[in-house]
Length: 313
Image (cartoon, rainbow, N blue to C red; front, top):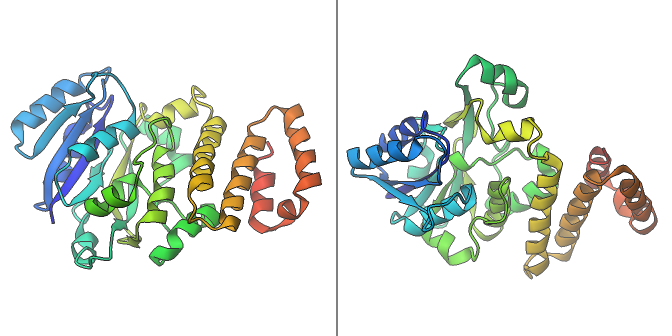
């Protein structure tokens, strides 16, 4: 295997060395690609030192040397990659020694186009633990059951929380399949949730297989300056970012002719339910009245009914 590990770097001078070293421990890692995204700290200088120290480390910036976010940075890393397989790692996270154990066996089968696993959590400080323990606890972030590849896309769309979660740090993709089947890689207009939107489309176009789901293969590093800090401190409205996410999913589904009509309509209803949840009170109740009149059967049904009520307020 020749794996290209892509690491977007922003505001991670304290952590990026650990991330790089954790990737370089594997002989299968052909290259580590750092995309420095105009960090406000000293991360660029650290990245330069890492590239000078390690022959397998490649350093790039965006052509205009400006900040573009994680999605465009990962796209640039994919463009620059030369390995047969692509893996991702956030600059404040790190791989564990078992990271590619399942991949080495599964990718012997040419039908396997992607493999996903479980992510653990590490708190870099007591303050970070106190602030974010109720969000991550000490649990694995993982897909809860071993699904057939044909069920992964619908599982995400219909099962939501009961399906579990993909994580970018535990995903490995066959590069040829990615470039051949995905016309758009990461959405450049989503600052948050661009990995979630990417997983929706990826699981529709590629056959993704479960790797190690019951123990961590990588670790999420939680600290005071994570992107989630902005969400937690209300600098970013989490409800509005979910509306943008589902708007992108619905726009894509509307143009993808291979998606069955009933699935497309379900995605539409999910998008609309998030719109309701993010609407001002007067507008919200007006929209609820509209749905009671025009879409009453859908509101009464199963999972949609649960999601509809959950997002009213």
